[in-house]
Image 1 (spheres, rainbow, N blue to C red):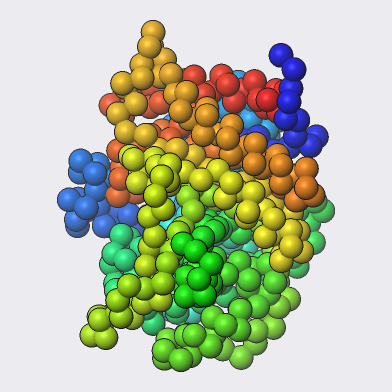
Image 2 (tube, rainbow, N blue to C red):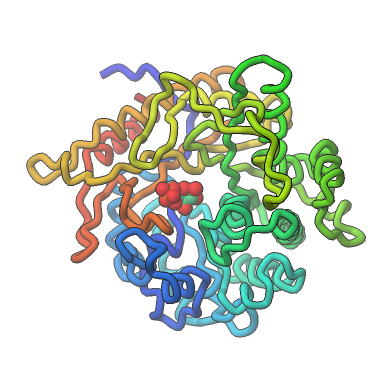
Length: 462
Ligand code: BGP
């Protein structure tokens, strides 16, 4: 078979996951509680079929076997996250030695199998005690995070050379403070913007600490879900709607992380509506001086918007949605299980934007994937024939390849995710993995996409 699309040498082939979604052992090994443990204990009805984060995919006990499987399918990199409440139960103070041993074992095992650990420090999982103290609204929590991050650099930085401060930091803002899909289920834009801002300060302080260490070959970045905002039409009203969306949902994190400053237009908009967060002296310089080395891009779906049909209810809580309506483009391709549009070219548009407006920063696709319900339907001779996933990945890779050919600085592709895992409120509704997991026995079985991806990474293309 001749390879049509060859990727640059050393391309990162792998997948991503997160501690809460794959480790399980939520009350083992000295782990403290995080907001997911707490929310599930208090409102189990919020979770699909009442399934919580207690055991998830059990990576905590099965990591050796799983890393072997990663190796078998040609991974040269994998992104897990560290659970803050496992490493430092309660969020501040003593480090939990059992957790140190666990993460040491995981990183060592990966390296022994030539799989580079890309380590993320925060994937939606705030320690409960710190959430009770106000979470990201409280600047003391920012300091606690910086201590936690520094501890991670000290413990694992001799082997981990790619660090990420946050995964999709906008999601806890949207879920927890605007749209009611994460704990603490607050609906209050002003508080949401404070959370967003303080997260960015925590990020910049962690970058500063890491850069001070001057670790050879060490890089630190952030992972953002960049969702292009496509306007319905070129009418100025639609363009304005899409520009505002871009400010709220992309540039709110992308600009400070990569350019070291917030877009002036966003500041003006928030000021006009009395929504500006509180800042401290020195914050501006902190952001300016601590830009990322590397950017992870999570891409699942585009956002399509149009000018608002009706004026917002002036008595309703202020929302970004006061400035746009979502637009359902006729004929769009959908993943009906997740309710997300599939638009492969989005990946290319993101990369071109990074090239043109963000100094062509070194980046990679840190998540992309397709969650499908009832995958058992596709079982044939004991294997899930997930041709739709192969097609999904390949179609996205084609656009990524084109972007690279045009000079974009994209260094890799990670699928969400390695094993079917627990998807927050959706629990095990939609399955994303290269490997299926029997949620009772935790048995892993390779899907067709696993062997396809093994070929692709072996050939460094397809
Ligand atoms: C991303 C998150 C992941 C993962 C994925 C799939 O936004 O970083 O944690 O869950 O989306 O989404 P979901 O699990 O909601 O289907």
